[in-house]
Image 1 (spheres, rainbow, N blue to C red):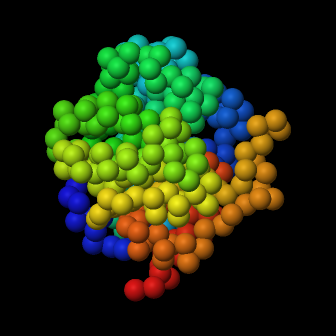
Image 2 (cartoon, rainbow, N blue to C red; image 1 turned 120 degrees about the vertical axis):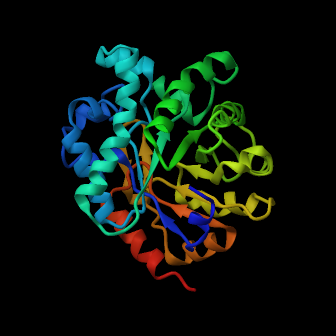
Length: 313
């Protein structure tokens, strides 16, 4: 996949939350209370996964994300009682499932597959991807060893783009991109988790992360860089904070509500809805790919599809 495939359109639409997309087809607890957070469904409910992907294709998505955010060799061994090879093959199967959904939906459009690679912190199931507190507590070699096979599996399966997502720190991003460099023909997107309008979750500035990775050798493989899993109201200041020129951005915010940690549910009374004015502004800043993260389902992705189609020329 060459960079021009992103540049030849004004803006591309990524799918929404896998969890939101799958919930019409599975029991809530089987996903939300499972330590693999949906990745287990590759193993035990392929049909539901296919249906969720197909729904996002019908909604207008041009990129499908594999449900491997929480997938890892260790996780599959521990929670699914699989051996190493079975775990590796299961990660690859997520790409096959996406291809099946694309074929069955027969949309007539080009749908590309993004292989989801979440941060190590997600596997801890304690919200660490939103603070990066494990950085410095785990050896860099151990981080490399944990990430390497999951990336290798997605690359071998033939994903169009590897999606490093919800990454809380420059340190982990650097390890991921060093692994990516071992597959020089593989394209990728790098998306950070951010704690406010200027900083990554671990504390580095978003602007410094963009400058570091968009202007070094990683640029040969990155098609976009950005942020996800945050309030959509943070997008404008985060994009505006970047002084690096000619950046292709990716962003996929949460559904606009606020997570109530006490009640463990979304408070949608404070919801912010992305508007066409937002998209026009973000497009001027270099936004090339937009989608949705937590609490963003098919209805919202369809709405954003309509906004993109009506962007001013």
